[in-house]
Amino acid sequence: MDVFDELLRGVRGRGAVFGRSVLCAPWSLRFTDGAYLTLCMPLRGAGWIVPEGGEPLRVEAGEAAVVRGPAPFLFTDDPADGTGPGRTGGVREVRWDQARDTGSASGGVPEFDCATVLLAAAYDVQEQLPQRLLRALPPAVVVPDEEDCSPLRDYLEAQLGRGRPGDQIVLDRLLDWMLVCTLRDWFDRPEANPPGWYGALGDEVAGPALRAMHEDPAHPWTTAELAGRAGVSRTTLAKRFTELVGDGPVAYLTEWRMTLAADLLSHPELTVAAVARRVGYADAFGFSAAFKRVRGESPSAFRREAAATDPVETAAPAG
Image (cartoon, rainbow, N blue to C red; front, side, top):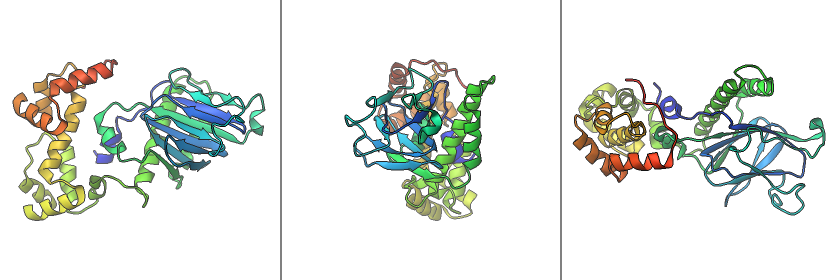
C-alpha cells in the first residue's frame, strides 16, 4: 500500500457531516464544532475563510479550502466586517451535531439570486495514522482545482438532494474522495511544507526503505537489510535517509510502529501483548518500554486516556 494511502485511510466523512448553504450578501457562517478538518467548496460564487487568529484566505468556485481544527473559523463575504452589526441576521453558527444541512442564509431571496452556494463537510479524525500527515497542514489552505478533481466536483453537486436510496453513503464517499484529492494537490504545491518522509518516498535511496517498512512494519528490519532493498551500503542509506526524513531508518521504524500501536490500543479486545506482536515486538515488556520512550506514557495509560476521551466503541480489526 502507498504510504499516502495508508495515512489517509482513516479520514472518513460519517453520517450527518455535510451541508449546503445558499448565501446572499451580507452573510457570515461561524463553524464552532471543533471538527478536526473541515472542507469548504463554493459551488458558486466565493467567500473568505477567516481562521481564528489567522489571515483571511479567499476561496472561489473551482477551489477548495481545508481548515484544520479544533479552533472555530468564519466563512464570510466580507473579512473586514464578518462579525459586524451590519450582518443580516447576525453571524450564523454551524454545528454539525445539530443538523445535517446548514440550510440557507438567503433571507427568503430565491436561490438563483444569491451569489454564493457553499458545500462544506466535517471530518472527525480519531486515528493516529492520518493525524501524522494532517498535522503538517497549516491552519487553513486553499487549493485551486487543477483538473484532477473537476469531474468529481460536478458529480458531487449533481448528487445533492436527489433522495435516492444510499444517498448518505454515496455523498460520504464522494466527500472522502474530494478531500483526499484536495490534500494530494496541496502537498504537491511548491508552497506546501510536507513532512520529510513525503518527499523521501520518491528518492531512489530512501524510498525503497520507507516502502519496505510500511509494507511490513512487524518485520525485524535492520539497516543492512533496508540498504539491500535500495542497493546501497548501510552508510549511504543511513546518511541519505536521515538527510531527507530527519531520523535514521531504525528510529523512524520505531516511531512508525508506535503510531500503529496507538491505533491498535483503541481496540479493547486486543491485549497489550497482542498489539506488541502486531508491530514487531516479541513480548509486551520490550514494546511497553519503547512505547513509553516514544509516546511519553505506557500503553495501558494511553489506552485508558483514549477510552475516556472517545466513548464510541470500535470493533476490533480482523486477524
